[in-house]
Image (cartoon, rainbow, N blue to C red):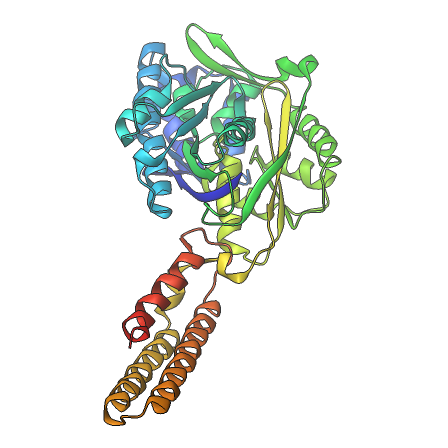
Length: 445
């Protein structure tokens, strides 16, 4: 399947790690923690955790810890719908796709449970057709985005003309829990809220990019299930996290990496935490720049994290040809897939229209159009002034050569402005629509 567009979204409320610590200290529950637990929170939130800030669907942090299970579930239902719809609407706008053009919506989440699932709420809010196929995937934890993409891949294999949306959304603030357990407290210091949406097509001819996703792999280790999972505590989600998780993640991911079809330009991984990323970098021959950036800017957002890394790489490295993606979490399970940019003619590459803001590029286009109009007018006028059939043929041939010259120079100008990595607009359609609109009025002369 081929990437059509991708977009991400976060709540508007941003908090630094220091902000989070000060907010937690204000809660009555903080004083009830053991001194060891208080020091652990202070150490992580005021030290070098690899996280600069996180975003929550919370105007204030402290009150969330006093909410009961019902209130937390209502918080999830409300905010997950808003955030997921926002990401999907941004994704639709990126590719100029209408909501009623979506044939299937696949969604993953683990920070709340609804029946019917979030896809029902999002379909209503965004305006999907009543026959759009909806699929909610739950219980896969932080690694859920890649299995969800794999499900979308299967749907597109059976329906290659379809447009498929994939959304990963987590309201981790709806799963905050406090007790004197190191893993539970570390979770409070890592997780943030976020959503990512992407659109996919079954063929390169239908997509806005030539990035193809394939080669999915999974490994699951049920013997380590209790080391990272959600448990239920009086109706609330409680994140169980063992200190061995970084090593488990590195070993599982290294096993998957051995199954790759080629050596990628970069690895895009789930931002599980500073220690997790360091363990991955020790096991893999790459420095995970985008993964670290996502962690620093948003914290661990669970399932959307790997798609945030993908969006960053798309925007910053247009020369890349291949990426290897991996995500992992509850199970213990890890997943991977590959993305390759297929070789094709330059007309199938993509452009970022912002590159046309440069004065020199627009000036060249204006100059070509100006001289083309002047010369074409003189050729057209010459056919009527000189009443000679042979001269008409000469004028026609000259006009054809002029048209080809202008087309060539317009194409050359646009080629120089190509951003091969930005899935905003298809160059193929843009170039030929513009060139035909310039030449058509004179081609009939």
